[in-house]
Image (cartoon, rainbow, N blue to C red):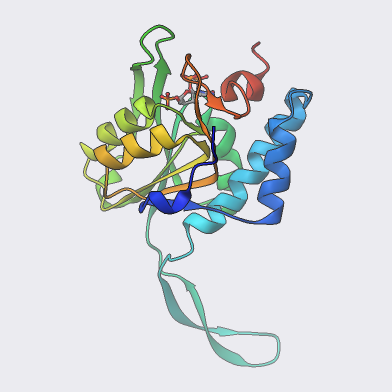
Length: 217
Ligand code: PRP
Ligand code: URA
């Protein structure tokens, strides 16, 4: 399969940073053990959180350093909500919360039916004031995009002002489908891979993210 060209996808942001690429390579290796994989997921998620929040608004405030007063900038108090697509999204959540500890957290429980690959919802819980919060939906894998399309569609019913989607790996098929369903939702990913296999796994990918984070296979 020829490498996919990220420039084909206007809503896609591939986060290019040597640390991200290095850690992702370690995650892709089949011999990487569960504890290390989980830690790397957390670290890459933190780096992606840095990128996805690059345009958060700032307010100027008056502060005093040990030497003199100054005007400096602080986050404008805009409210954020991280939404994890269960279960693998939780592996990314911790890294993002390390960087944005005051964010609220919502959960969408979805699994892919192994035969149809259709996303089946089993849980949904958001903060009560989700309609005033900027939302960042997280899930390590954007494969067919069935899960992400369904999760973002469900969150949209609660009408937050805007939504961004963050994943570790995206397949071109998933990006195309997600952008068609949610053209208003930018996608941030650590890598755009080559495609999907017959079972809907990303190639070359990193395998089943949930199983590798939690050691369930
Ligand atoms: C994985 C992954 C995504 C989904 C991506 O979850 O975490 O949610 O697959 O695939 P898609 O783009 O084709 O929908 P999975 O269904 O394996 O559930 P899990 O997180 O509980 O392991
Ligand atoms: N879900 C995963 O965990 N991995 C893939 O490659 C595709 C979907």
